[in-house]
Image 1: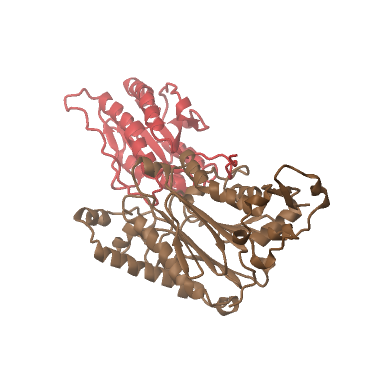
Image 2: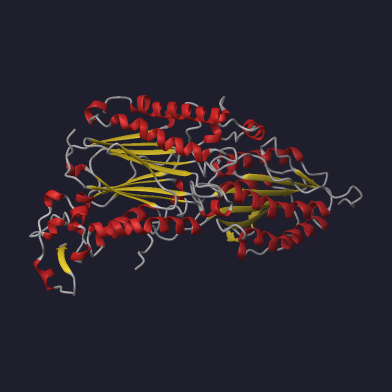
Length: 377
Length: 229
């Protein structure tokens, strides 16, 4: 399989923050995050950030939110099984193409498989860790009748209730899958924000669909986008569990996930040491931000995974920002950060992957130990 | 250098608490007086309960019904700024009108679609509705947040219509309370504004997706030799 892109054109940054309220109550973080790239599966580590330069497509990213209510007392495990299963099942798309899947009923063969294998793994987990008598009593309790789907014939699954959000970025397509609450945001080439999968307006408050529902595969929301050339890719894609959106008041322009996404792009684009430094800044700050948002918001666990397309961000920055990019030459670990086939000491701006030539006016900047390597019109 | 946090200001989730108070003529005297005093007395405890849960912001309102219905404060008031204004009793029992007005406040908007804790509606009444109660109740239950609300009813004295209060609660597992004397009424009001609030805010603000319908244990009734209304 041949990639459209040269190496290192993507970057993944993610983190899972333990909810402030859960910490107070000595409950575990019931969110999980995981990604797959180059035959490697990596879970989001606790209290740390994922920061990966992507070598080749596809990349698969999954986040899951185990439900917090008492009856979902094993939802932490349910979320762990959810991301593991979603990644495992979606790996079979590695050698697919847009044309090979566009007319298929993705929900029936892909989402159904995720659901079926999640149930199987949960059953195995139950066999290994049988419910106590008290847990059995809890599962037999009547659940809220306002969601009739919940009154089902396999209450054991309720203990493991979890959402699952997955994205597959491939050479020829991007596929979004979502079951339950949480958010997927796309920042388009022009900086506008899209939600490929809209909110489920059947529910109010904390109600949601879940893998623990009977035949839950049917509740998956699916969106497939064709990629015909590099310029089709968005600047950025963000997956988050609902702890993030829930911490912002609804319907206000000055706050919320739209602004969160556009602020992230701004932070990356406005960094005076270049795009990669901006991304490093996101990496260094993300977990602290999520912890802070949880503390001042609703206290829920919050997991976020962001995939950046570096060439598209550079193009966007070149068209929209007037920033002088400065770089201390001694800071740049060239071999690690740059595509080897593009490293040319004579063209330092290309070393950073920027597409615009060095602007004459920036040559006037001279600070000790600093070298101008790029600028944006 | 610290990078400014993306996304803008964050907030805890709102919980709307509404007293629905019967101010008909039959409430005159001791009943309305005890109701006023009980709510005033328990406000400090209610505020303490709220302070202990930083992940929920409680907003309080009250609506009275007699000949017609009227909001005591139409706009939700943050609990820390809330104070009670004594109600007076006179007129008939237009409960249906009051429920219809509460239903308007349960619409989306003004309620948010997702980001709120289930509202708490506490109905206090000593009599039978004199208007179209069923119509008002249907309007309330037709609103998603009206249906999802935790609805509690306190019947004051033996003349209260407990069938009506049961219909308001609309949940066979939650019976209405019966306050046969001043002690009962004070205890139930204290329970609703402290124990219940604590339970609802903690249950709903911890990321719970689907919550059971059980409520915290109510207070015991006053001893049998307590003087009735």
